[in-house]
Image (cartoon, helix red, strand yellow):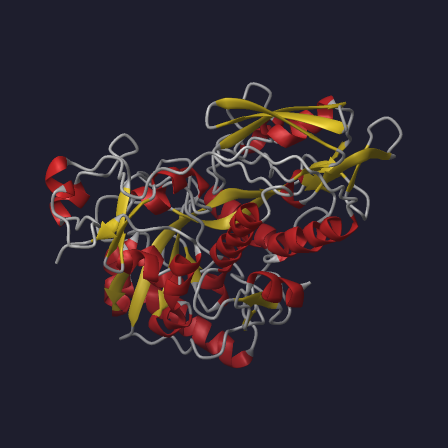
Amino acid sequence: HVAWLRNRINVDLSMRSQLGGHTVKRTLRPSNAFVGAEITFAAGQVLKAMALDRPHQFRLLTNSKWTGLQQGGAGWRATLTANGTEVVVEARSTIIASGGFGHDAKEVESYLLQHRPDLKDFPTTLGPQTTGDGLKIAKALGAKLVDMDRVQLHPTGFVDRKKPQESLKTLAAELLRGVGGLLLDRNGMRFTDELGTRQAAVNSELAATKEGRNFPPPFPDRSFALVLNGKAAAMADRHTTLYSKKGLLTKVQGFDGIADYLNVSVDALHKTFGDYNEAAKAGHDAFNRTVFPAGHWPVEEDEEFLVGFIVPVIHYTMGGIAIDPDAHVLSESDEQPIPGLYAIGEASGGVHGDNRLAGNSLLECTVFGRHVGLTLPVAQSQQSPLVAEAGSAADVPGMTEAAASTKPESGVPVISAEELSKHKTREQRTWVALYGQVYDLTDYIDEHPGGPEAVTDVAGIDGTEHFAAVHNREMLESMGFEPIGPLAG
C-alpha cells in the first residue's frame, strides 16, 4: 500500500520517524514537508486531473454539502448542495468518507455530547465540518454505529497567546516530541514520558492539572509548555519554521530565556534538563521513558530554544460506522452488509480499538480506500456530467481599473503590492502572491486541508516564505492554479 501511494500520487515518503507509543521508527513521512498536506494535495491533483481527462466517468464537486441518502434509482440516490445548487446523484454503490464527529459539541443532535459529555469543554484540532453528518445519515438508513465513546485526545494542541481561549487549535505535530521536545509544568519540571502513547501523555496532563501544576489564566485549563532545544528543532525544521511564523513557537536564548518566557526559576530548569541528560545517558528516566532521540541531547544551557504552550485537544474519533473487512457498512438489525454501501476513513468505526497510534489515520485511509477502489463493482456510464464553463482568462474578478490598465505587451496584468493588499477577504477576492506571481485563492479557502486560515493568514500579501515553510515549490506547480498576473517589482 505504501509503494502504491508513492507511485500513484508521487509523494515523498523517504523519512522514517518514531512517534508517541511506537517502539521503533515506523512512521514514513516526507523528508522536507508535512505528510498530511503532501498526501492530500497530491491526491487532490490526481482527482482534478481525472475529472478533466475523463468527465464521462468521473465528476468532482467542490464547495458541496452532502444532505441525504436513500435507496432508489440505480441503487442509491444522494442529495447534496453544490455551489448553492441542489444536486441529485444516483449510483449503484456509495462510499461514505465524510470524517468523524470531533467538532460536534454544539450540534443539536451531537454525538460527542451524547457519548462523551465530559469532553464538551475541550478544544479541538478538527475543522467545523467534522460534525458526524455521514454517521447520522448512515444511522438513519439502519447502519450500526460502534465505539462511539472512543474519542482520542491529543496531548499537544498549540495555545495561541493572541487568542488563548479559542476552541479550534493548531496541532503541535507528534514529530516535535519525536525529535526531543519536552513538556514542562508551571514550575519548569517534566511530568510525563513525552513519547508514551497519546492517552498516557494526556492522562499525565490531567493528573498534573489536578495537582495545580498547569499554567494559570489567561491560558486555558490544562495548559503546559513545550520546549525544544536547538538540536531538536533543527530535526523538525519545516514544522518549527511554520509554527514560529504563526507565533506558536518563540525563540529564546538559553535557560535564562526559557525562565523569563515561562516565569519559572533557572534553578528548576538546571535540575530538569540535568536530570534529563543523565536519564538519556542511562536510557531510562523516572517516567519509564526509554527512548531519547539521538542527536538532540545533551540539552545545553547556552543553546537556543523554541518554546510554546500546549493543551490536550480532541483530535480523532475511533467510533463510527460499523464495517466488515471489505468496508461494507453493517446493518444495526442483523450486522449483515447493506448492499452497495461502504464506509472508510474516520467515518468508519472499530478499526483502531480503544485508541490509535500516531500515523495510523492516513494509513487507514490508504489501506481501506485502495481496497474498496479495487473491489468496488463499477459500471460504465455514457452520461456526461455537467461541467461549468470556466471564465475567460482575461476576466480577473475584483481587479480595479487602475490595476487592470497596467499591462505588459502580453496582455497579462502586472499587479502592484497596493492592489494586492486590497484583496484580503472573500468579498474582495482573496489574492496571495507566491514566487512572484499573484493567485486568486478565493474558491480554495474552504478546500485547504489545513483550514481557511492557511490561506487567509497570507491574504493580500506575499505568502512565499509562509508557503515554503510547509510545501515544496513543485507542489504549487502541480496544483494547477493559474496566476492572474505577476507581482510588480
